[in-house]
Length: 88
View 1 (spheres, rainbow, N blue to C red):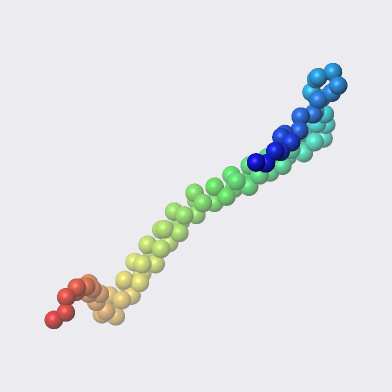
View 2 (view 1 turned 45 degrees about the vertical axis):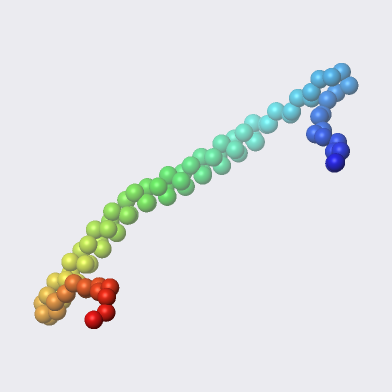
């Protein structure tokens, strides 16, 4: 059986745990700036997705309608495809 040493507990000789050093004001501001930048990029990506997807759907429908109009002008008829499962 593996007898590991277990976790290392950092304690002073008096039995207290040492306090972590507090981050400086510059480090806090840098973290806030990085968070704000990432939040801004996320908001921009969401805004682009929300507003471009409907535009692409409408553009696709317009293109489909124009394609069907051109085919109708040239006399091309679209017949439904019948899928047969048995051989004759």
